[in-house]
Length: 258
Image (tube, rainbow, N blue to C red; front, side, top):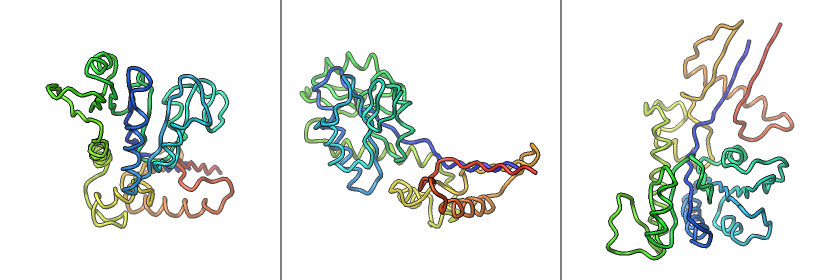
C-alpha cells in the first residue's frame, strides 16, 4: 500500500527587475513587503546578488526590517542558507521558502511569476520590456505625465498602491486554485475566508483539493474529501511528534509492504 499526501499549491511570485542597478528595486520591493506583512501575510524574498553575496548588505536588511519572514540571497555557488553547490537560478532558490507570497528582486532572465519593471525613465522601461515576459506593471522614478501605456504606471510615493495591486493579483492567483464550493471542511464558512487564513500561515492548504492519493497493489483507490481530511489530520498528528519533521511538511509518503 502506498499513501501520498501533498499539500503544495502554486505560490504567487512577483519579480521586480530593472535594466541596471541603482534604479530603486530594493526600495520599491521592500515597501511592497512592508505593506503585505503589515496585513498579516507571510512573505518570502529572493534577492539576486549578481556580484556575490555580501552578508553585511544593507539592502537585504531592508527586507528583514520590512517584515519578510525569509530572505534568500542568491548567487553562483552560494545561498545565504549556506547551501554549497547552489545554482544561481530562481528555480533553485524557491524551494527554500515556504511562504505563499514570494517577492523576487532581480532574475530578469527568468520566466517565473509576474513582473514589475522598475526604471529610471520611459526609455529604460521600453528597452527592458523587449527582454522580459509577464510584465504586469511599471514603476517609473522619473515619469512623464504624457505617457500612455497599456500597463498600470506607479510613481515615487505610490508604493502602497502598487502593493495593493500585487495583493489583488496574489488573491486571484490563489482563488483560482480553490474549488469555490464553500463546503466548510476547512473550518471556514467560505473559501475566501479560508484563503486569508492560509496566506497568514494559520492553515495548510484546502482539504478538498489537497493531493492525497491511495494505491493498493498498484491499483488507485478513490477517496472522497471527508476521508482525505481524516487521512491528512491523522498522519500529520502522528508525525508531528517525530524528530526532524518540519512544522509544515510539503509532501509525505508512506509505504506499507507485507
